[in-house]
Amino acid sequence: MAGSSHGHTPAAWTGVIIAFIGFLVAGACMVAAQPAGFWAGLGITLLGGVVGGIMRMMGLGQKNEHPVHQIAGQGEPAGAKG
Image (cartoon, rainbow, N blue to C red; front, side):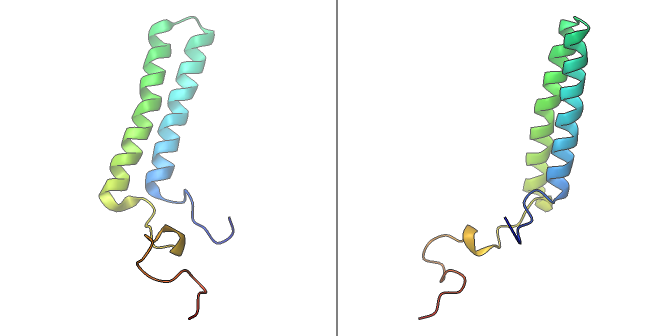
């Protein structure tokens, strides 16, 4: 995907980091046979998605300004000439 900025936003980075920490907690607790910690880790993982979504709604996510993201009928595709 040359020229795209897929995932290079504060919302994406924050959501992925929180989810990764939750994954690590859940994995460590699964190995240590701690069911409560495992479920807490899964909760943290889901929290990462929620936080990322909220940050995106606050305007910290990717903007849909790329021609591919345009709704049909709102203009010509990139490079189209009539």
